[in-house]
Length: 438
Image (cartoon, rainbow, N blue to C red; front, side, top):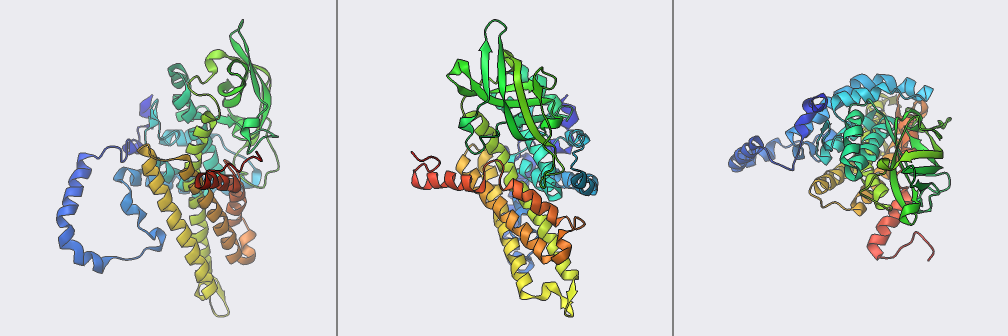
């Protein structure tokens, strides 16, 4: 079972949680030669705009291998498909199996056929995936952070054995049901309910979830609802495709995230065995724990989209001749490129720092809110500027930038809007709750 994901991605296991003997040897050698190389270093130091603050030097060998392998897959296998997928508003489920073969689904989970990567390794994966398209990254994030992770963190051993290996291989596709038609930023007001039947030892679920990535193609549904046996506290349940009363109609006509399937989860007296409840969490702690993991990946991923837009805008303005000179020779263009590069570079190092803190158990939800809010907002601004720099050509999907603009509009909104994350940070700064009037 585990061998399916033991490709080179397995090299990422326990990155920066344990230092390998080889790494120790390298560190000693580096220390011994540091003084001798000091002058040479000053002379040889160069600035690479593609890695402005030398992020590469902060990554482990395993993380670099993971990133480079997955980048090759994304560029060789996914990039050629994305234009048609976006035009047709169609997600190919085979992509999940392909990512499963590479071992990138649920990559930070230890065991159960998962790769056990570091949090930074996971972030590097989402960055490369969203460099192609946010919809592909969304599908992968939901599978990994919102379905596999809660089963791993809150589930029984039987639930883990039953679901995680098949989800890791991409044989099963999962979705996460929290948002409702009338309750988005206020999940505590959810109307989905679970009534326990002691005779049949089942819960009867009723309610509707909306804007659910993967739901039309899902085999496994992690759904959150209020349980009558816990004084209406929120509990998580695992539902399966084919359960009577369960449906997942697709939401059509999206102008964003068109290359992934989005829909509703409709539950009409769905009978769920009691053993399908996630037993080890109750209240909003459960879904918020999932969302924090997903938001961390989104913070990395959004910068992948931003990097694509920067690189495309740079190349276009270098090649485009107007008034006898490249557009890139104009001060306004160079200022925009410099702003883009600055925001991306600083955002990446924020992700790196929080990733290391996450693996040491020192990351907080507020840190992740800061990253999600900043990086998604900056990425959206960068994509808009890039679209403008391409002029009329910027609205053609031939250049891909307009697709990133549309996608990032959604990314800046979902998993906590830009303003909701501002209120989370504002509460941390002032100690005052601004979500409600009381």
